[in-house]
Length: 202
Image 1 (cartoon, rainbow, N blue to C red):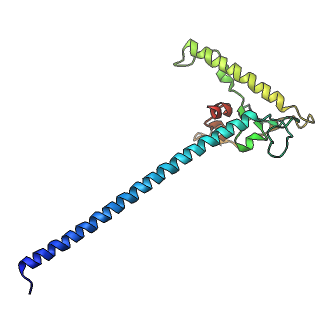
Image 2 (image 1 turned 180 degrees about the vertical axis):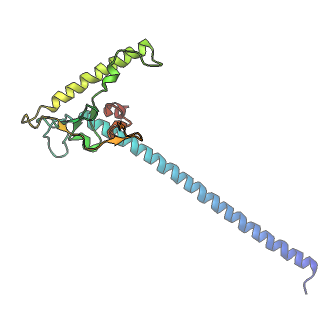
Image 3 (image 1 turned 90 degrees about the vertical axis):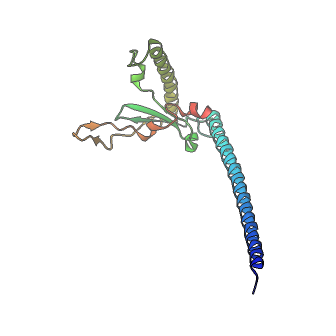
């Protein structure tokens, strides 16, 4: 039978071995955590770089697009034919949209007609005289650009092809009292606002 001193020595040896195992496990866990953290950081940096590159490619694609039909494989945005712009009319809120049938496939040109209310030369609640003038000036600038694109959209091979697409009123919404409720088009909520080229170039 082992003496008490031998038992204590053996117990101390077992505890030391267990402590070494725990230390090794902790070191392995730390090494795994740090390796995973480094991998996640690299992947995140790579994703951010790819997103930035995609945004730049998209902005370049829109900027280089002639918005005209024609071109050749690999150069589809360099057409020299009739306009590739399409005018669309939304009668429910009497608003127009111009889209390029070439570059808009990849998230390109979509320009909404500016809202007429933004061109009203009257100060709004909490708006200064200078802010009102800036708003009206921006409205006029946006309207000139929109009308230029709208006119370009009519440059087609036939007059019929230059006519705007008329969406018609296909559905209505009512509030709890049964009154007609205006619901903006999904496109109206795009983060890029009136002209998506400005956001993409930023």
